[in-house]
Length: 159
Image (cartoon, rainbow, N blue to C red; front, side, top):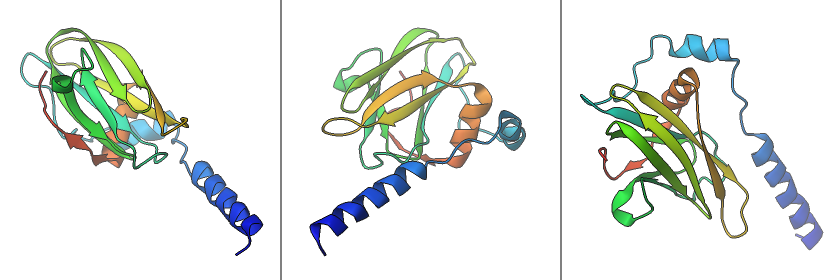
């Protein structure tokens, strides 16, 4: 194959992968699909539960590690790859959730006993590997993602 043909083929694959990212259904559709859906885990007594979802397949081989309250090894709760989610319980209070890829992304959450909190990791192109953003989701959208994704790697379920 000629170099020009190889470059054209790579460009076509890149465009196909990036444009293949599914768009979400309308909110009404997502709400209907999760109306009777039971999450895999609910909060433990006196705690909240956090679901971290990564619905995009972009950078699927890159781990996005999730930490609670600091960026130390013993604070890692687990990690996701593309199209995965993890979950963990939190004590009530204000916490910082960190997501590590090429960069550190963070989100602050206020957890009350019984809360179910959904955060989304969003990959972006990086210099060496994928970068990421982290943001809160409405309940119906978070449940929709959990329903359609597979379980990532969980190191611990309580912080």
